[in-house]
Every structure is written in structure tokens, then in C-alpha cells.
Image 1 (tube, rainbow, N blue to C red):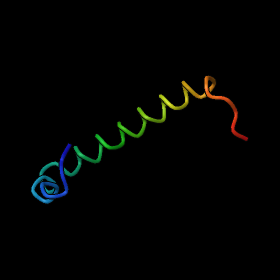
Image 2 (cartoon, helix red, strand yellow):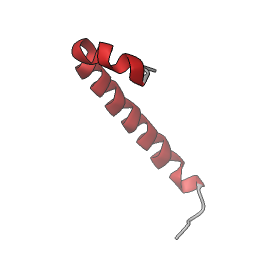
Image 3 (cartoon, rainbow, N blue to C red):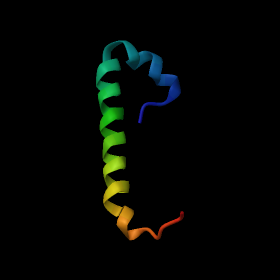
Length: 44
């Protein structure tokens, strides 16, 4: 992962790539949570 210290160095050239990667990570996490949700007891 890119640390906060290096974020400034990469933001100019890799801003779009980083944003796309974050989106993919969020979608992947959401997919895992959604797929495993039926296995989790209801907390309501």
C-alpha cells in the first residue's frame, strides 16, 4: 500500500489508477460481505 508520505509522490501520475484500485477494493469487500451475509446471524 502507498503510505501517506508517498501519496504526494504518486498522486500526480497514479491518481486515476489509485482511485480505480480503491473502487475495486471497495467492490471486492462489498462482494465478500454480501456473499457471506447469509452466514452471519441477524443482528436486528
